[in-house]
View (cartoon, rainbow over the protein chains, first blue to last red):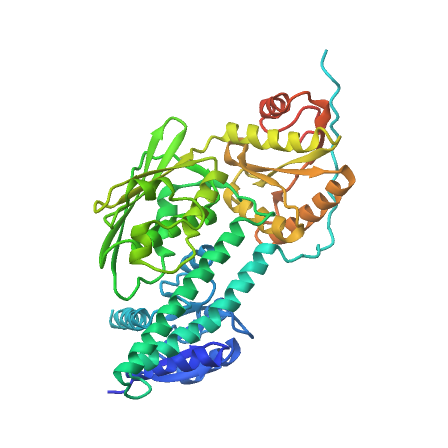
Amino acid sequence: MARRKILIADDDPDIVLALRIRLEAAGYEILTAMDGKVALDAIREQTPDLAILDINMPEGNAFAVLDSIRGDGLPQIPVIFLTADTQEKSQVKAFHRGIRHYLTKPYDPKTLLVLVESALGEAGSRVAS
Amino acid sequence: MARQRTAEVLPVPPRARRPRAPQPQEDFLASVAHDLRVPLTSLREFISIVEDGLAGPTTDRQRQYLAIARRNADSLAEMIEQLLLFSRVRLSSFRLNRRRVRLAELLRDATLAQGSSPRDKQVRLCIHVDPRTPEIYADPDRLLEAIRNLIDNSVKYSGTSVTITLESRERDEGRVELVIRDNGHGMDHATQRNLFRRSYRGRQARRRNPGGLGLGLSIVKEIVDLHGGEIVVRSALGQGTELILVLPRYDREEILRKEIGAVWHRTARSGRGFYFVRLGIESLNGALPLSAEELSDEIRVVLRSATREGGTLISECGQGKAVCLLLSGERSRAERRLQEILGTLRERLQLRMAAHVVWDPQPVWIHSADYRHPKEMAVAILQQGCRPEGRTHGS
């Protein structure tokens, strides 16, 4: 069975590497992007099963990427927001935009894996129905 | 004999220059917080990656030393969070942004905003809202921070599994209770007495959880005090803890009286005054394209970006169809600020307003010294349904 593909988009190479190590060890294939524009190109061309998006990356933050996914005919993949911004209003804003999976830095690796499985599982249910 | 009151209607210009936006101190602290959390994330996560064997096998001694490194990184993370939050609440420019708040929504947002549980703990969060609980007049962002601090505290001072219940209920005619209850360790009387003193952590707390600045609860107290509320503690060792935040309920007239009174005190002695603006949007057929709450949100954004001094925003005048804005200071300066704010607001709202909507702010300048007492001024304004005396324009 083909491995599921996860896109990690963050402008911090250390965070990208840390996430890559965790998720590859858990059996996922990883794509990476350092900004919002490259992230959108990767979604368009390689159709990952899930995208983990840093809220504050350059060339299009997570909200901008989300708008493009929803509005530009791109594959409607599940998204996890990853951010060091812990202001409650940001999290509530993400919730009201339909983002149910939100991970704050510093994150717990177990929570990361649970969120990934949950997001992929929900997407699988939507496809099946 | 009634004193002559000064009231002039100021025509609003069709367009204003976009104001320069200074960076508020809160934004500065948010940037600092972000920049501290990012390297801390890598620090903790790479320690964890090596500990978990993902960089190759490790010896017992290496895992022991890595555990020490990770514990200290966790402690550093907690101290940074507490210091940042404490700094924000204590800023000289810190002001509450109050609005009408439904407690059911606030408590739901508190559970959504909760971060991940520590590795070694199982946390269960429950919400019970009495549907008869009245609304409160509060800053929802600050209250969320207070509730989050209390939840974090409950998690910290409990065993491997804890149930935390968030509840809201009416206390008496003017007040509402917000309860955070846990089945954790509980505390003795000495700890309860000193609970909200800065940096105080009781004997039980220090033995179980070394490290940490102990600022979290003093932050909660600051926030509750700013809301005009109080905190009640009920606890016993081994029996869990109940913290009750007692907050004033939403009362439109009382709020208006207090805010106008505060502005009067600030301006009467110095011979200054304030602009009173009633802002509402109604379409020609009477429908509301924008609710008072949505309008309040737009105004708050503009107030924060347009001027460092902000203004006093009173939500929901005029039977919920409008908001009131008070801008105090020296008259010509207040006039300039008002023009900037209204111009920016019009630009923002043009994107959302239909072409046939009526937009007629009609600001009125009020010279505070014309009123002997703030109550006199507040009554005059309230009797006009948020329109002050002396207006010569019809709508």
